[in-house]
Length: 200
View (cartoon, helix red, strand yellow):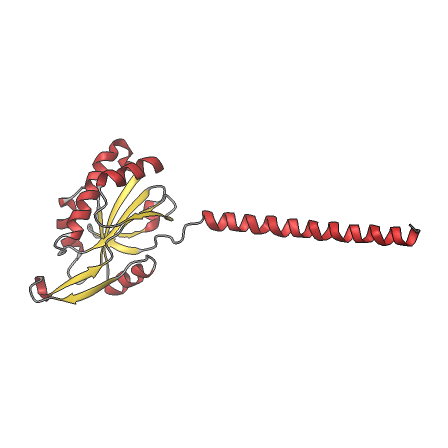
């Protein structure tokens, strides 16, 4: 093999090595980005609403605690009271760990669910539940940060002639307000409690 051929061979080897090195760098960056993306919650709880005692609350007020969030309305005939009863059972089952969890009920019917109406309603289930309301615009803005649906449904037999159709999932957010999990309507309190106990 002549010197020129050897030099060419070495240059080819060096080029292949350089390409391999660049590929490894790009691949490691890609893997790191994927790991960061996979670890990030798909969305965060975000709201600025008035609680049932007349205080303005945001998600930052509950930093460091897990949040159990449910959207509903006080005139709801079955789904809302059933879910809030399950939440109350979960809070009771948590015992000393209950201080690490904040249950929140956000109305999707601000026209009727004033702070005073919520103050009469939420303590019926558990004293630790915070009811939140606001203007229709604030409720609409809040709903855009959560994957929820709600609508007014005219119904002559309902109070004031209408009811509300809405998402019935119970949402769980971590201490940084990042989405952690959700449970569909009808999930037993025991199942929710077991999941929470594993997390906290």
